[in-house]
Length: 573
Image 1 (spheres, one colour):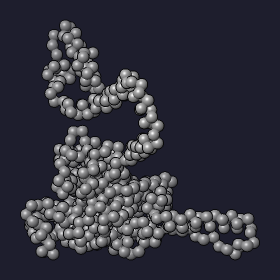
Image 2 (cartoon, helix red, strand yellow):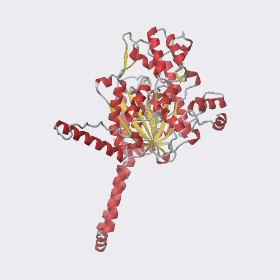
Image 3 (spheres, rainbow, N blue to C red):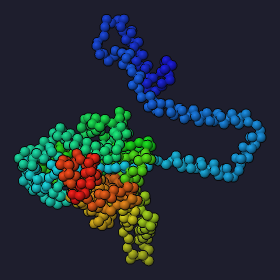
Image 4 (cartoon, helix red, strand yellow):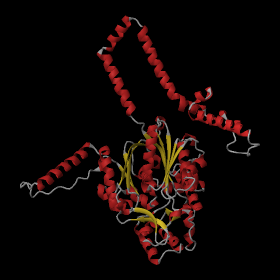
């Protein structure tokens, strides 16, 4: 191996060695063969290795910087040893006496403890900003229009249509939710929807591109500053992936690390946030772009199995994007700080098949929802909150839980022992702690009225505390994993959130999973207080005369144009 190869080291040296071997093979084979095939991949071309295109700064940081640290420490140790070896005896005696001073020992001990504690701390993770997708007005549908589009498919029986109509009436969704263009062509009641791959890809482009563009514009962050890209979409996983789609559109760095999550259900956003947290903590000073959405185009069920018809009446278009960062400079302008993420997985057969994608007896693909979904969700939430409670509940609530458990166990054992004194006593029920004592705002996944009411009953929440979820379900429908951020946006507008208050996001997903995330508000945009998201969008569209997705950020109604749209919109409102 040459001196240049030894100095470079790593993969580059191995590549140079491979090129040398290929060159020798070519030289040897040229004596036996009269020629070679043009553009032969085994034909070595000296100019194909262009050293000038190597990012030498990256090579230095990745290969040489750790060695530089080691050499610097070794040099300091050698210098100190030489000073001790060549110093006079009086100097050594003075140094030993200084070390034996109590004050000096205390300073050294405290310094060592501080350094050890600092090394154990992980970098905090901040949400610099978040946006949610507001579909164009052309995507808006009413419940009657959904029924007409269902009839236009020509595959549903009269009983199935009536069943879906009853589901719509009791779903809690309003008259202004959104479906994608591939299905909207059935509004006339006769044209069958286009649920092919290209239509699904166009829906994904409209949602994801709008979200990423709005987020980067609002945060003034260049695509080259993104270190991690995480996109979750449960039912649409094309090739190339959605991550590759974003990298191609926005020209992200070649060394960006992307993660495309599929099949994780409606709880995938918290999973993506948890993954981003692990990555950012282990690489301080980095940024992660998280995008959550669900594709509706290819997931319109066209059969008559009642357990699979619910997806046609509940799920709607939506998405959200977050810019997470572990940079100290980003903490000065961040909206939220991530405190905790907890994930619980219930793995029994009933829970596993509770939300199950399959084909019916006629080969129609869809997602079957079990009648036990509320009970399964309750068990999953109980496991999640067992992990969550010690971190968010105040001491008095934790003490109540411990005291209640002690009384229950003592009375149970006493009754088994047939103690006459407590024969007529009853064992108290388990105490449900008051999570409102540690959490100011609750964002429960808008999976349906039954799910929201089930969580309300288990946690003892008031109507005001579940209003973000109820309103999100009414205005947007079940947007899958992004629904918790529509609820967070509602809290920012109507929930009177203030800096220092904590937000708990609870999501449920197939598998069966219950995931939760706790955020603390750092910065509040008071200018959007009391302005509905859809109303802000319409006002901005009136000012510009075009779609809001082209003119303003869906996160808070702030216009990303430079012509004073926000002031004009406030006057219009």
